Image 1 (cartoon, rainbow, N blue to C red):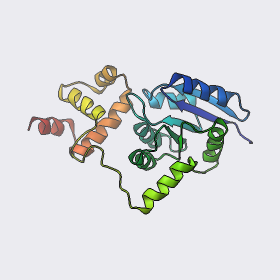
Image 2 (cartoon, rainbow, N blue to C red):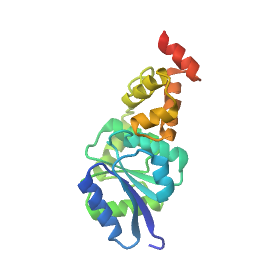
Image 3 (cartoon, one colour):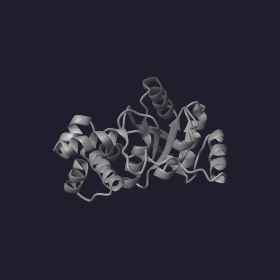
Image 4 (cartoon, rainbow, N blue to C red):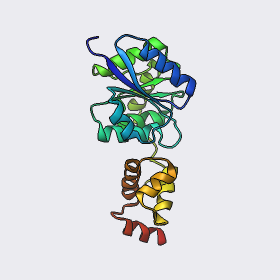
Length: 211
């Protein structure tokens, strides 16, 4: 391996996160430049750690893994992201791929295979746990379509929280402080809220909520 691969871990399980950190830093050619238990202040964390590869837990409190992939890919297109999950969930597999994930592996993957996945994605591949790869092919062949995000007219839990804050007249900074997320993340969610509710401004949004 000619170049050291810089890896960031997002994993809310402390023991698992620490084991990944030790594994990566204890293997020549790899270095862990960040290990986080959530995706709050995501852009700040990525900007400061400068990873090549991100291992992303799909289920985290606050910003979930799929939302985090959207944000990273919008702002750091050169970064490769490998999703990690406990379950082979059809809908989440599709959402992660649609969001821009480059690989998808199960958390029970052996340590050596985890490092192989990092090297593979860094070199342009798309690593997947065999069972995930088989399921993905099966889903594509069957014409599976992921469920809409709640529905075209409804918001997810985080978006509902932010919408309520907006209706109460709170600024992006106030919303960020209340929900323990960054202002950039608030903007990202507001953009999606506007698209889902088909409005173009705070004024239109307020009017729609009053109806």
